[in-house]
Length: 55
Image 1 (cartoon, rainbow, N blue to C red):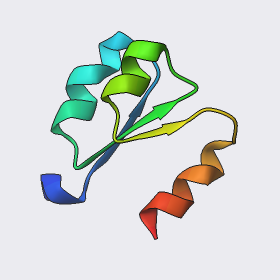
Image 2: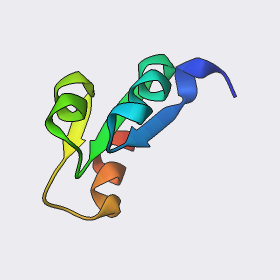
Image 3: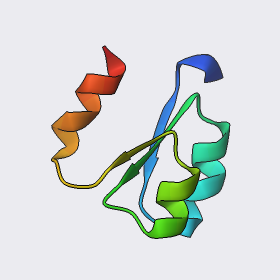
Image 4: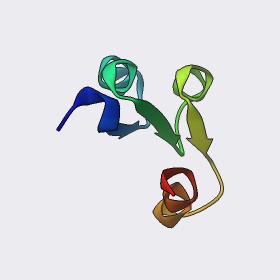
């Protein structure tokens, strides 16, 4: 899979490196530092909210 087609989802600082190399970095119910650096932050919905960004 080309990196241009990858998505990484995380909630803690340990996920930031992975999110940084993915084409789309998603914070899911994450700590503030992760929300600030993610492309998308999902805070009040389920994982299915990610589908909105993938279509």
